[in-house]
Image 1 (tube, rainbow, N blue to C red):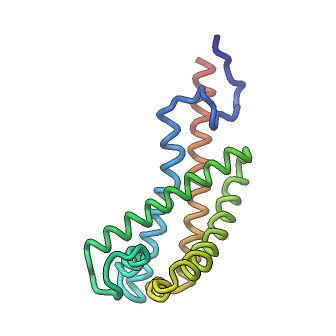
Image 2 (cartoon, rainbow, N blue to C red):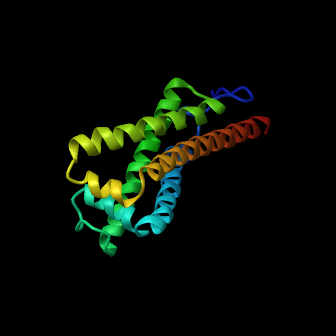
Length: 180
């Protein structure tokens, strides 16, 4: 016997939510927010260094490509892929945190913004400065520090808004299904 959810019930992480919606909910927000972040950094890079400086600096942090701002298409693609993969993984981590803490509404967006702020400090000072110090100068010179902070903030807000939008859409669909 199946039990129906009351109207407006929280369907996140529930076995009765169709499985095709789960990957989209976990992967889409981080990937989309990461793509927006990447495009913003490339646009800002066009004014200060080159459009490809940021993704190539990301590739350089994983020891791919030569240092500098010369266009290397392979390094550009690798850097973009690494950036999007990390953005997606962070989006999945944040979604798990939201589910675990059962955050809803505006709290999701504020929490995502705080998450991105924490991630900025961890990424720049914890990982790059401590674990990859030889790649830090190129990374920090590819775009201004303010642009990186701005990009992380936009990533967080976009992540929260997308997750909130997907959750509200799932709740609406659950209510429609219940009403028949």
